[in-house]
Length: 525
Image (cartoon, rainbow, N blue to C red; front, top):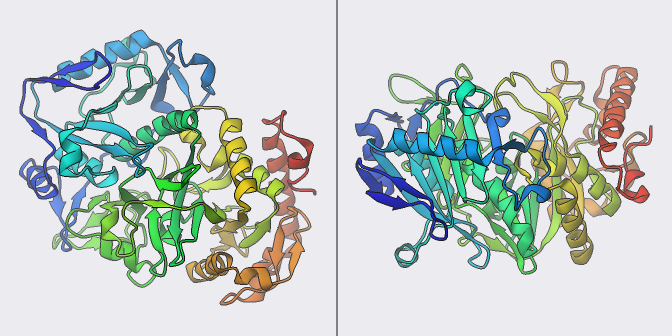
């Protein structure tokens, strides 16, 4: 059987085994169980284990250096170049590997707004990977499926491993994106998140050409139609904080912002579920039922999930269609946001739990993207590590940061958006000494920012970081709002705060062309 991997390009994939095209969720679950790819939990969710790769492999991700895109890409540690000939060689090997095997194909979209969506095809070696794709991307209607013509294709063959000496890769693992051929090749890793993040990287390249800002953020909306964005890296609280029963969930991780408003790039959610509890996160807890996929969650002999067990990884995950959230907005579109929240998990424990930002400070912190990589989200990360991730999504940005920052700044100014910095990280000391900020406090602070009640407080500039700290917030002890007050040794706080301020300034040297007014909006100490 010949399967066209792209409607507008000459790429074809020769498949001689059984091809399972657009199976339903029950059919995919049945196939995955039949093939012993995993098991069902007591809630009906499908549980799989991804082997030694329980997070993304950013050092094994490549962008094909085609002549037409070469000058548009921010080449470096994030966007590692791959020669077109190397990609073609890998493509042929992956095709030969899959030729006699059963494969599973999903046709759908990236983008809930029909004006900007990208028709995609996902070809998988594993049934459960295809189930993951079906739940995470936008599922077409029957009528849309009849007319579906993929413009980008993901080919995932976890069982195929590259030979670094012969194939020009760093290791046996590769995630290779060809924007020219409109094909993504994934091999040597069973971690399903590589598929979703690769398509997100593609959208981060394509959408700016349509004057749409792609964003690594979650989004929700109140009953009056007021929407909000939550920027942040994995583990900072995007999924948890946007899943609010009092607000409609637009999406939990990836969005576009056009002249008409915002829209979800995905059709599902991908939640970290380490220490998940029904009490603290009831919507996510209830979403993990039949049709959902659990990755690397420890399960006992009776098929009960143990979310507090991190023996496989800290990066345990649950993937489920957004319809599993009762308050989900279908389709995932909304108006221009009134509020933007930058989420950071500060491992130093010195940033305030919430602070208001001026437009200049908003641009400074967006470009800085300070947070902590949390354990398990990438290979080799075993404890929080302070890092700067430009635009709160550097691993997924093909273009220079200025492209995204300028678009965001223009939209904040045009729509008069209020911007806050929220620290979901440590309080009372750095990681290993202090404690993670209580979720109940963070929820109260976010709620006050969204409904405008926080604006009734008096604000004091932080002496080091310059951001505006409120003196009160409903549901939060006042002393918690000022991080220095939570440390048993204030002088130790001062040392850590100055250390982090220095890191901010050193990191910002990467942006020599930024205006002085934005540069001066950073730490002053």
